[in-house]
Image: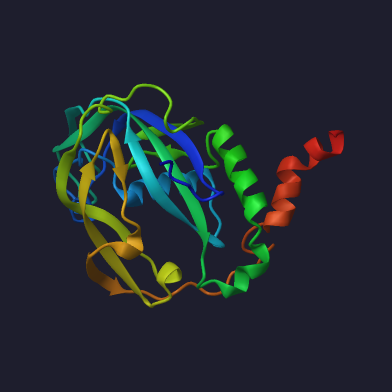
Length: 248
């Protein structure tokens, strides 16, 4: 039986020479070692680099691992703000490629943006943004790991783990809950029990993570003003597709 995905689902591939997906706690300094698979939060950051508005929230449905999981260790000299030289060992994922399937949902806590909720136009702009490789630089977990995004069919081509029934990765970091997305003045961290089946990671939605911890109290951002804080979807759609429509 085929699975019916939301009508605003988009698919793309993202790839790069290196990736570094870590637990946020390990980003404070010292040695860093990547998870074997991308985190939900990292993939969400990639999609937001391609196209994002405060009107909606990207929900990551599935990630398909296309290449063999390989690690490579490098000596890094991070910035030492106290002076002197520091040598750290970073363990990166090497030669990665992922297929991503994701859709967006309206941010119900941003009632001030209801007039910007045009499903079809946001969907069309998102697809065009994928075709152009994204609106901002794409990073695979961290800034030194440049990524590249392209349109694709999620199921096309042979993946390295298509014939592996299941691989378990244990408890790992999933995502952050931000005040503007949960309607509370707090930031929380979510964990989940990660596994891959037939090369595909089916993410739990952030709202369904059973392990959650408060990070700190944080105020929600003030109300956004369309056309002041960001371009409204109607104007942006006209900007992206106007010339094409005029030619028809």
